[in-house]
Length: 264
Ligand code: SF4
Ligand code: SF4
Image (tube, rainbow, N blue to C red; front, side, top):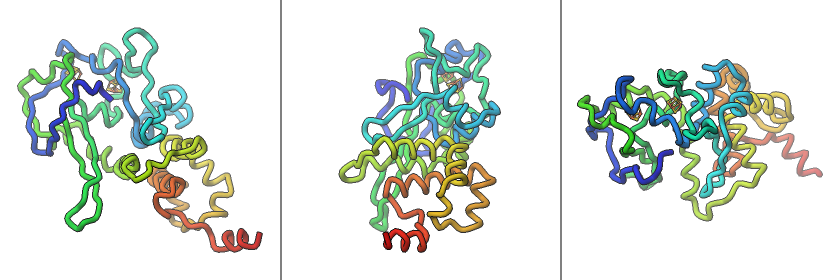
């Protein structure tokens, strides 16, 4: 997250044009990699932990801090910065980003920001409207370069399509703050949200080493997928969060469990 003073309010479409070039010879090289808050998505964490050969728990404790969003009460993993005066990112060196090909979605988008709003679709049903905006920080000289882009070609060049596809459902959860009443998450739900979002190893353990599969009716194919594929587990995590937050009945309690509960 960049300082709001530099975020332009004009909403951009994918066809919006701008000039920009970021390269090693520019005088502001790596200036944008310090003193910032970078919110991580579940897919960011998977890419980075795998890049570093760490478990999700190790990655989260070494490289992130937790932040509770004031409006939604959702817990987020933020990229940890050095505690030196410059508050530099732990991954930046004078040569640039050491995790470049696995850098988070927010780093890929910069100097473009991306937002989502809930709007009414043509059929009268609510739909998510994605839009873009410029972030023009005074230290960034990239805008003075001649190379021309559209938002669409920038996204393609930076490889954000895959990140957006992976994160779309999870990001839609954040629009919950627009629901009437803004129901708050209690600390237990915050921990469930955080684990299912970011700590894939702990979430897998929870599913396979607790009574979870005795209680919930999950088909065999899904069970095998989430056992063996962490991307499937990540998507299942969103279903679990929706259930925990009572947004959608994405999980079904087994009939026999319901009957046993009735008898008590
Ligand atoms: S400040 Fe702008 S131009 Fe300079 S390195 Fe960062 S993104 Fe590139
Ligand atoms: S992850 Fe890489 S691109 Fe992002 S702030 Fe850190 S060094 Fe810069």
